[in-house]
Each structure stands twice: as structure tokens, then as C-alpha cells.
Image 1 (cartoon, helix red, strand yellow):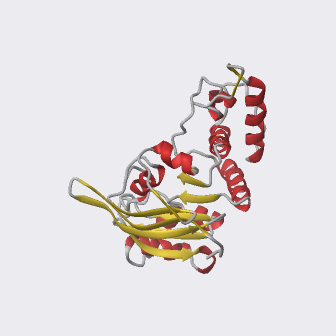
Image 2 (spheres, rainbow, N blue to C red):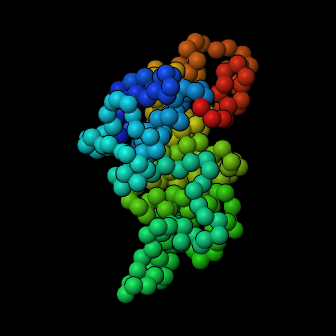
Image 3 (cartoon, one colour):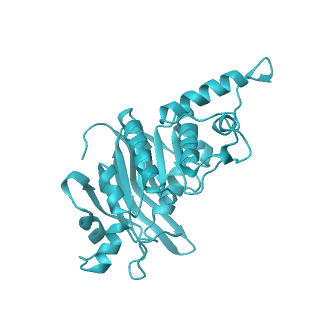
Length: 268
């Protein structure tokens, strides 16, 4: 796997709900400035783990470290203040507000007691330029395409000094040309030192974009693989716990829904 300092580290993360153990000592680490995939069937624990990292829920046990420092998140703002931001499938934008207002949501810049619109527009434009987009920051964000709105989400996170971006199936609603543009942006951010945890069921995307992949099964870490030294079939085998052959394996490798594997999109 890519060498360098560890930015995000999870050790022995556990979480249970009403007698059901969702996470069973999940342990893995993510190198600073890398793009690291998190894979697993529906129900493997991916969504629960995102909740732990985003501050939406608190682990029952285990340790989360950011840049070597132990972190305790009681709510999402704690994670965001630490530099961990989550981009969900359903974007958290207000369609009727402008692009700039969405980027600065909840923290409008002020001067002499009034909103500093000039600064807000300027910094919003700069944040968008960082992710390779040039949009009218005064226009309602709802007037733009899904790909453009996703760029606004990324710009918003970066403007808040994101160190780690959690990307929860960000390509699920994007057409192919927009997927490649997103990947170009993500590679550029990684080159700048931003650390990305990319959650996807599509092995073609994982092996096109990511440096390494951690596989969860039944709430536990079962494999950590360098994508340069493994294959998509290795990930699928780890996901299901056995080697696959034929059409079922092909479906899994494409990340499409399979009734036998449960590797399509859906809630965990």
C-alpha cells in the first residue's frame, strides 16, 4: 500500500443495536493523501461505520485516531470540526439557496454586522475552482445538475478545511462522463494531501480510483488489499467468504444487484 503517515486509524470499533452486533472490532488505517475504498455486501457494516466516523453515532468500544490523535465524536459537528466531512448519496444542499450560500451555510461571513457578500462570492468561486468547476455562485444550487451539485458539496467540505472526506457511493446517480470527471477531482484532492474514504460496490470503480481497499463482512474486517497487487475477484471473494464463478461473480464485480449476494445498492 502507499507509504506515508497514517491520517485515519480505526482500532477495535464495535457497535451493537438491541442485541445485534453491527460492528465487531473493525480495525484498519488510511494513509494521508490516499484514496482508500471500503467494500462489503449490504449489511456488512459500512453504513454503521460511516455513522461512527461522521459523528452521527458513538462506538460502543474501540478507538478512532486522526493524525495520531485519539478522537471522540458526540455529534456530527465534532467530526466536522476535526476535519472529517461526509458526502452522502443524498446531497445535503438547500436547493432554493445560492451556490455561495450553500457553501457558507451556517457561517455567513460578516463585516460591520452585515453579510459580506463580496467575500462570500469570491471565496465560493475559489472553492469551486479547487474542484475544477466554474459555476455562477449567485444562482440557486437547485438549478444545476447532480454532478455540479456534488461539486458544491465537495467545495463546501474543502472550504471547511476537510482533512478526510467520506464518500458514500458518490457515483450512484451520475452518468459515466460525470463519474470520470469526479474521479479526476478526487485524484487531484488526494494529490493535495486530502485523505479519501470511498465507499462503493462497484469493483471497476474501486480498482480504477483507489490505492487500497478494506473489506468488511458481517461487521468485521476480513481483508486489506493493495489494488496494485490484487484483483476485483479477490475483493468479491473476501466479501462473500468464498470463491465465485460464472454469472454471479460477474454481477458482483460490476456492482449490480444480485439477489443471492445482496451486493446491490440499498440500506444496510
